Image (cartoon, rainbow, N blue to C red):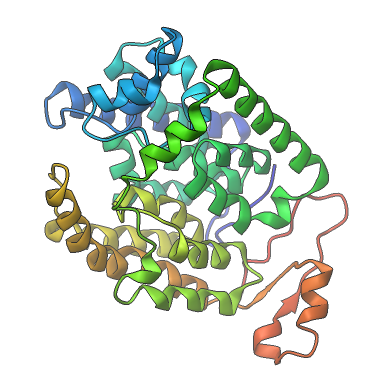
Length: 359
């Protein structure tokens, strides 16, 4: 496990039992929100429905990609290991499966966040987090890679944000023991997917060929500014922001949830949450498919850039460029200007990581 930055304002750290209770309560609340939205008819579907349809098809020995295409308004854009990974949830009825999935992701994330102090739960009050609960997305679970590096195996199920998290926190995910554990689980998932359906890679490629809405932010107006996060390249949260700029995504609010890791204090959490809700009156949240969805993405992109992504960039740029780096990077930048080279911080002996986030 790793310890991410703590808030200097926090005088007490919750005990493990208190954190576990908080995780159960947060998970239950997030799952209840997902269920309420579906059962009240406020949304006829959730993003987890594609995993439920794919998993049920796998269990029945049918083509999961064809099953999703026939039963959902979008193709299955996930590789088959995602469906294999979520099989324990698809034994539940469709709506309850989505609620259980989001409860698990939020609960796990809340447990690790509270290691930083109670204030860290404020991160889950931002609109991207609420949007994740509304649509039962993967982002809460994938965000935990920052705390539990061997969860980097999730990259084979969620190649976009999963790979970004694994790379941004590479100083932890590439530690020998961690890497071997993550790679072992990833291999098991991939092998199980081939056993279940040997033709899935070609079916997945055909599926993502229609994913016209996945465009990196760097190609959208103003998005290139996020690359200035590399001025703080030694910090994992800075690498996270820069990688988000080049990651193909639909610019939905839930995509940005991992950026909560740029928050280091209670004040920052409150400010980020407040700014994220400023976007809400201007976003197109009830959209269909095809041209209507494409237009909504183009409409929402600059709003989310201003209210979610740029605040994360500002938080990163306010901090010093300090942290551990591999030897080859140190050699490469040995003659670079001091403002670019930054300050090396060695990992403490016997610890997974050091806290390099304090100014």
